[in-house]
Image (cartoon, rainbow, N blue to C red; front, side, top):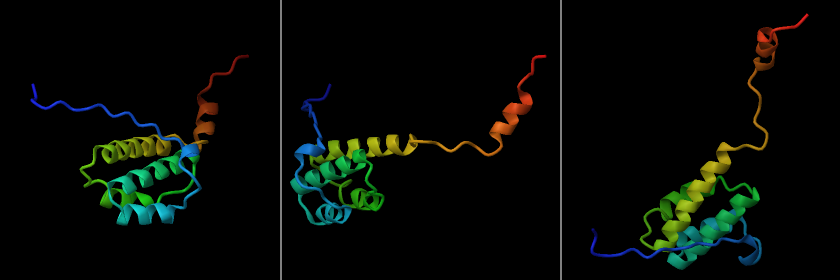
Length: 114
């Protein structure tokens, strides 16, 4: 058993409470030049933008490069939330395209009743 105990950390990210709208370029600049509280705020903005469906594909490299090495617990939790939400959203497209030729194959293999 470890001698030190970890504190639990609950995060609530709400786009309504984060203030005025932010562009991806502003978030990227905050991630690159900010300290831990600035990075946490920028990550909250990025998560809000991600959940709102705004395009933020250019932020991924900046987040990995400037946020991943952070030792701040709140920043690490937000980074985990960003990565998990980003993967979940990218794997669940709104309308997945049907594979080519699938409809034709189903028609051929479906038995007909006479």
